[in-house]
Amino acid sequence: MRLKINGFANGAYGTGILNGKIVFVENALPNEVVEIEIIQEKKGFIKAVAREILEPSEYRVKPECPYYLTCGGCDLQHANYEYQLKLKQDVFVSTLKRIGKIELNEIPEIIPSEKQWHYRRRVDFKCRNGRWGFYKKSTNQFTPIRECKIADERINEFIRNNRCFKDMRVQIDDYGNINTDEMMLNLNLEQPLFYKKDAFTQINREINLKIIRDLLSEVSTINPSNILELFCGIGNFTIPLAKKGYKIYAVELDLSAISSLKRNINNFDLKNVSIIRKNLFELFKIKGGFDLVILDPPREGAKEVARWLLKKNIKHVIYISCDAATSSRDLNIVKDKYTIEKVKLYDMFPQTHHVESMTVLKLNKD
Image (cartoon, rainbow, N blue to C red):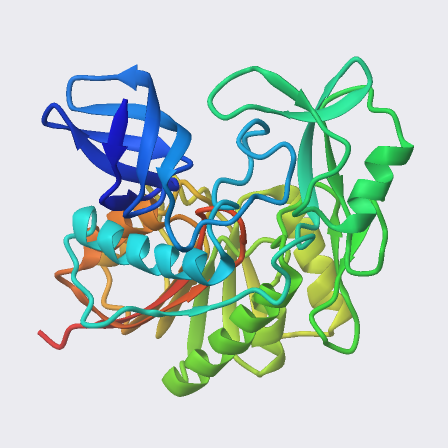
């Protein structure tokens, strides 16, 4: 069945119209004509995959990975890198408009990744009969692999030289340690941050450093007396901010992350950080006045935090997110109370549809 692709949606789907329904098509780019196979049909939409590209986009390239579209990971390898960045900008803006009911005056800048391949420092593998692999998208169909094109080469060397026995996360730190109980994060400070193997850290080191750089710049402009940092983890932002002299109240739930954060605070001899343990996915209370809230939640977003902000009069908020849909939902909650002053995007995840964003909000005067 032929279909003209006239748009692009979150999740790396080319979109078209068939019998009055929107069709979301894997492996398709805007302005292409493709032969589709329908894989799911619902009342309001259709999901399909492009089996043959009849009229290819000028931006289409041959995917580098032999497992592409069967491993369930990358979903944008069929577009050249510059076009990937443009698609991510467009999708972010349209998602914010559709879900957040917010229209930006201009397309936000996107910072490209220095590494388009082999940038991932952490990969969650499936294991079947001693073989490493992944599940095909939205299925339990196992795809064995020999290497992952976006994983750090040292992770690929590890899976080539070691037989797996169970589903396993393979993680390498900034100093070449693989799956050691204690890992180290290099933020270009005088010493590393320490963390436990399964703690959350950003997978793309270069982009993480650029986000920290820009965050410090924004905070310097705001010049807050004290900062409430939510979802602080092991201190990826906490330590660089505290070293600049800011008073920080760092909020985290995970005990392992808190243990690492305490160690990192002590190692840097910081006296200006207070740790608060809270579950930010439930109704919560935090006492005290703050000039600035910084939050960097997981993909689920921070709906309860957004609702909490409605009850406060905190002058500035910086929302760092890895999911355009949930961040748009949360920004919709606070859009009548806060004005977006700046949005910047970061390509933390090349070859996939995911994008990191930093949104700077200011309390409305009225």
